[in-house]
Image (cartoon, rainbow, N blue to C red; front, top):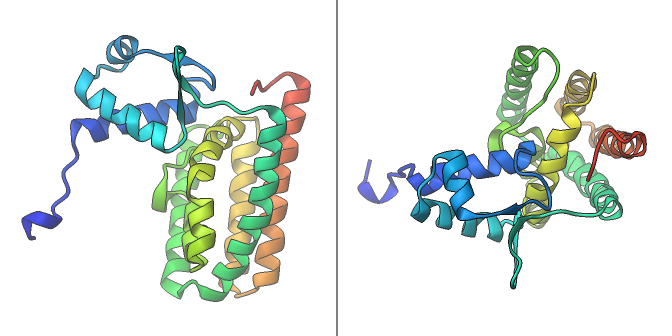
Length: 226
């Protein structure tokens, strides 16, 4: 393989992945102020790679830097989060419809394989969590790219994607939700495999609507703090 296409995993990449996972899983909570010294000690990182990672996280909208206030993990209000989910409902519904029309058979087979891996992961977690790494391992990411709609994928996989991942994971730890979400994912893929765009769109919108209502219920019960 030519040297110019060889990709190496750097210490900055390691720091970035470590901190992004900590943000998504809530180990670094929304609104939490973070400092370089503390992060180096807490995650066994060195200052140079950490600073590069912080810049990348800021560009993804997961960290915000305020004058005289330092760096904080991004946070949104309850109303803003609900609006994000309403946007997702419409946009991902369209992505599912177009994925049913445009994904190849091999891509659909790969989707089934991905969900099988998700099921094994949920079982390992004893049904208590449904964590999807970003990219091809993420069901929603695959649907967005499978839509073959470049503008739609750009909107879904930009800042919106990374911010929503924080709340998707926290929701996935709710009792019974991992298996329920997986079942909803499988029904969406079945509709896509049948090339039924209308059904795929309906099921995706219902899936995200159910997630939004679950969040609203958890907040009302005091079981989830935004």
